[in-house]
Length: 250
Ligand code: GLP
Image 1: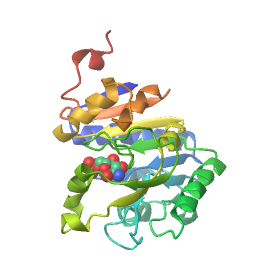
Image 2: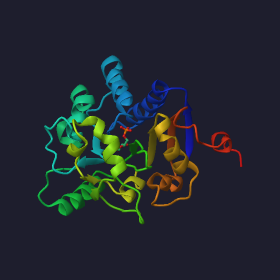
Image 3: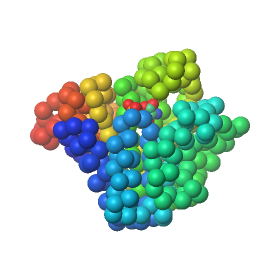
Image 4: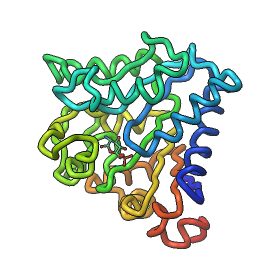
């Protein structure tokens, strides 16, 4: 696992932008796995800027988002569909037919989950997966558990996640309790993974991800087994990493 230590949120976003923009430049028909949350907002702003200033071309890019709340219609401003369109898709030239986000309103959720994994496979798999991290070390909406849930599935959100995400809603009770999330294997099958982390409240999760035991109790720790995973953390998020983790010394 490679660690890029950024001085600030801004620098973290710039480092992430270089990786994503480089991927698209080198392979214009890339399949990207995308994340929501506050953390990647700077990345999306930068990608929009690179598109508008030097014409980074998304016309052949295919995207798969990690997750969506169950019961949330795409036009609901709290939905991840809405978030992605507002922050990214509506401002670049990704083709609408190449945008994929789990359907939170699917009548048959297990069938929708299976179809999502199949669709990813049929597009040749994910080239580069962007991830954030939850305070409890979740990735996507894969909450701490006794086992790693492999494939796209229905999740019950942890109380900690509901509290953390309540800031996007008027009341905590408005936060949906269930979501559809790519599974751990879906994420691990991506050829490259880049996880962004910013802020002191992510420091413990980052430590568990980078140097804790690989365990479903800290889902992001699975990335230690990924052949091409990079964590970009700002100083606050890296605050609990031991010195040897940062220098790569044994
Ligand atoms: C959310 C999302 C995750 C995201 C995480 C952190 O619940 N499901 O994909 O990475 O929580 O969000 P934020 O970046 O806002 O801290």
